[in-house]
Amino acid sequence: MRDLRQRVQTELRTNILPFWLKHAVDEQYGGFRGQIANDLTVDPQASKGLILNARILWTFSKAFSVYGEEIYRQTARRAYDYIAQHFWDNEFEGVFCLVDYLGHPVDTKKRVYG
Image (tube, rainbow, N blue to C red; front, side, top):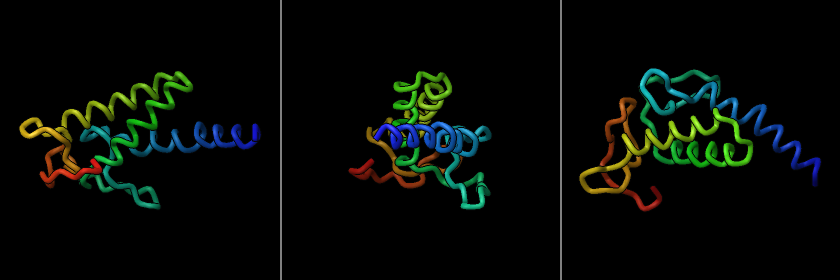
């Protein structure tokens, strides 16, 4: 069991988290890229989903709490800030499920899952 745990941690820290740090951060428009194809091509104007941003927030928050690496905290903060600034509906409260690449709501309906 220890071997499995070590292999999972190694995969997480040398492959999964670095992949998201390298490919998902949207330096041009903020937050995280909305679409990355299997060949790693990016549509810079793809819409951005709440679920992905929330999962990035949770994953990097947990990674920071376990490993204490500052980049994980910064990435979690980036996700939190983007959700708060672009997905949160200030007028009616709740969160939008989808925003465009600039962070404007694509669909203003609320869904329970979000």
